[in-house]
Length: 134
Figure 1 (cartoon, rainbow, N blue to C red):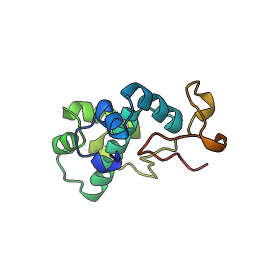
Figure 2: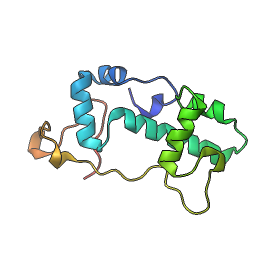
Figure 3: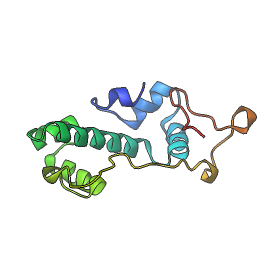
Figure 4: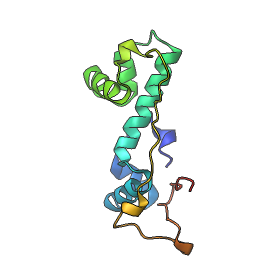
């Protein structure tokens, strides 16, 4: 399962981990070590980025529709998450000036106590995930 291909569907840590052949606990630890954020934080950030892109393409899209399409149970929860991510509510998006819907994340491999290097001392990725370029 590729997370990007399934953003429009309901996703859970258990489903994503099962698709990789790992336990939810082990997958979560590896993902966080490789990407610097939890699996579900990554999914939420990607869904919000898609919502922001959709708002820039169609300013007339109803916010409740956008919220439900983005996997949120209510427009209020969506608005809070969107505002936290972009610093402006979806009703006022896009703000003047540049907006980065996907802030750069640095992997924290060196900080992980549970990370085990693969062949040649390089980090291993769980099946179905690729490690960020070094």
